[in-house]
Image (cartoon, rainbow, N blue to C red):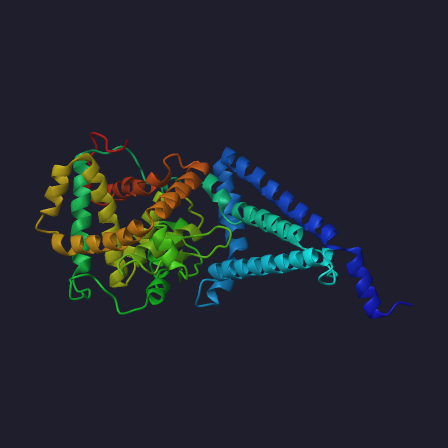
Length: 408
């Protein structure tokens, strides 16, 4: 009769690495193929996709990861990346050492190791990891690109509008941003500042969603506050303010951004936790959640971000009207423009140091969005203005006229 240790040894001899790796890689590949097929089929009936996946499956399968992420004060996703990178480097070093020993053994310099060099094993592990990560994209949110949009769920009437309406929207948002800015602490240069740490500011982001959900029921849900990125420096060079890596459903925000930018970015990333994948809609939802917050910094951040998007669009159509908005006595042109300038200076300082990195990052993000049927790629972020006009056209008569077109 075999002893316990002999049975264990026999078990591992039976299921050797090659056999186990084949099974795991095969299972990962089948999982990837299955979810990719579902991803392609989802667009055929987006209402059904929303009803089954976005509303039911997505919240359930992402909640465990969000709950784990909530337990730690740092980004779990980034930590996993660090661990995986360390394991890869360690494996590469071990494989290299074994290869050198094998070479020496062939020359009779050193005894042959019991195990062969493991470069093949390392490559297999990388393949399995790639298959798992690819599958995770579709499992944990990629299908949301094929689901109903916020525009369809909210009932907002998004349509072509005239320059007059866009100008009035800019005046309204500029006035609201001016009001929200009053009373906020400023530094010696007149920039809005906050005594809280970046993580403390980000932790307040879910609060506004309760009131936002009173306006649109599809905005209710369970959230895990975004984490201040460990790799903020890298994200700054890549010109990334925030990210929601679908392969691990944890929102991450670049802490190098000014304090008044953090709230709107945080609320934007939380919109992805609800299953809203399109960037323009996440921008609008983030705007709405920010201005619904009781936190004064969040309110300013929301109106400030909306004003920036609207003014950028007005500038592209009519520069004279853009100047006229800045000259309005109801708008704190000096204060708001100072905040804009500071934000631009921060991002430009990183762009100039690594312009190639920022361009590559922009191209990758643009290609990623287009591959998910967002035809205008990174330009889709600016479509938030159309949603803002549709939203305020129902509440403010002076922003409801329609005659021409501001849409390209």
